Structures are given as structure tokens and as C-alpha cells.
Amino acid sequence: MNEFRLDPETLSFSLISRSKEGCRACLLDIKESSSVPFGNSLIKIYEMKDYVQPSKYELSGDFFKKSEADGYEELLVFSREHGKTRLKDMDKEALENIFSVIADRVKQLEKYGFGGNIAASSYLKGHGYFDMVMLDIPWNSTGACKECGYIKNSGNREIYSDDHICAYASFAPAHEVDICIAPKAHVSMAGSDPVVLFGLADITKKLIGVLGEDATLSLMEAGDGHMKIKICSGASGPFESLGMHHVHTDPEEISKELRKKLK
Image (cartoon, rainbow, N blue to C red; front, side, top):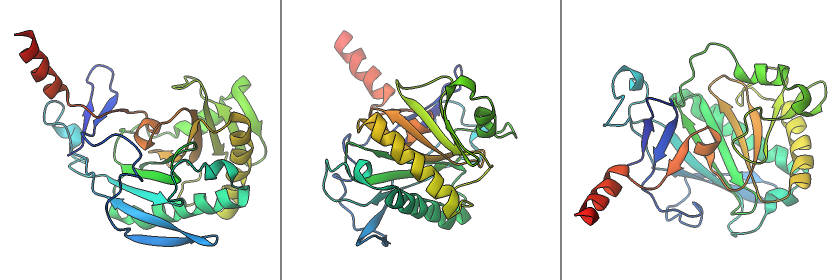
């Protein structure tokens, strides 16, 4: 069972997955739940059973009332061959198609109330799939859209801007390269239209070409209802895109082992 924990001092989340590390698509041993057309092939959708639950060790009271063993994850696999960097080679029309598929999935799943913090991530150098999660956390209760503020205050961190799209470097980057591309209008994934998606795909394609293949691309919406694309250097997943630490070890088990070794 996966478990989210909130550090009471830093208010940052960690996900302890206790699952196998490695390529999620290569480790698949289940049948796809559905598929959707993608050019001359299909995107196969796999519903993952990695449910999450509030921590039983700390902050398990009122804070987690809306986060009681919920959350959703699925893989959208568009290439069965590992190591084929198809996203980097796709044209902007194909990227728009993928963004549209993800946006449609979000729209279909919204009715289940999994949560408004959404990220679908793909490592450009890895397997051809997007790992998508929908969660209630990280908690977002400010009432204001952070993304609208980021765009307004991008200043000399702005990389590209037109009437509809803004691309900028994050003010406090979590990676060497940490780029955001967002519509200037306050648009959600489920509410996006082909014009918005094509504009995002266009500048995303150009930036991928400049940045190279050692990067992660995430289509996300962090609780404020404003969609964006995030491109970060290195390999990471949707949980990292939402600002969480992701580890595969249990601190209680590590402590137990170390206590034995110290005796």
C-alpha cells in the first residue's frame, strides 16, 4: 500500500511507494482497461491499483478527511518499445493529439472526484508512456490561482510569449532545467480546446528540440484549475512534478534494520 506523509515542519509531502523501482510500463503484468486511437495505432490505457492512504503515524486527523484512501493512477502507453524517444521525434500535431487524449481522460475521470491535483508525466528518454495521477494533495486552499500569478510576474525569466501562451523558467527551480508553458487565460485541462492545446504543443515541440532528450515532460494542473506543461531536466514522475518526494523505502523498516545492526 502506498502512503503519503506530510512533514509537519516543512509542510512538504513524501510518497512511500514500497513498489518496484524501474520503468512502470516494462513492469506491467495486467491487461489494458481500454484504448483510444492515436494516428495509425492505439494508446493503451492501464488502470493502476496503487491506491494511496493518509499516514497512520502523524497528521491523521482533520487534515486528511478528504484524502481517505483515495487517488487514482493510470498509464497511457503509446509505444511498447522501451528506449524509443518518440515524443522528441513527434511533430506538433502528434503532441497536440496526445495532450488532447490526456485532457479527455481528465474530463472523463473528474466525475469520480479523485482530486484536482493532476500530473501526467513522460520521460523523453524512456518508455513511450505517460504516467497520470489525480490526487487531493498537495493541499491547495489559497483561493487564488498561483499559475496566473507566475505568468504575470515572470519578468526576465520569460522565454516566450504571444497573445495566448507564456513560457518561463521557474522562480525557485527544483531541477537544473525547470520550464513552464501555460495558457495566459485561466483554462483547466478538462476545459481546454484544440486552439489552446495546439499552442502548447507548438512551443513544447520547439523547447524539446532545444533542450534535448534527457528531460521529463508533464502535463499538469496543481489544484488551482490552471493547466500547464512542465519540462524538467532528468527523469522524474508525476508525483515529483506535483512537488513531492518519492521514495521506495519505509523509514520504520530502515530504522528497525539499523537498530539490529547497532546491537
